[in-house]
Image (cartoon, rainbow, N blue to C red; front, top):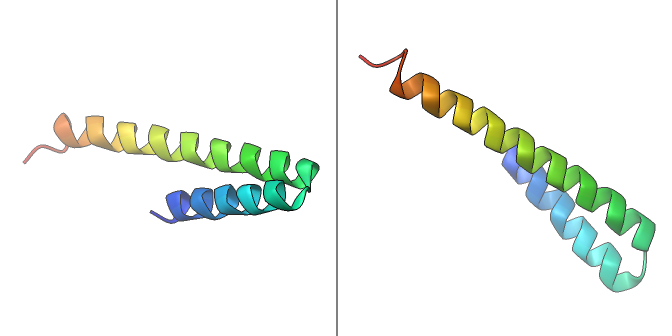
Length: 57
């Protein structure tokens, strides 16, 4: 859950920086947020598949 929170924080930083005109910072933080979100999705899917197959009790 921490990865998703950090992705949300970087997304908000990106929005605020974009509104204030800091386009380079906005683009960089948006890239970090996107990367963290994809990492979260991959970890979630791996754990979901493992939970449904291997670790079934």
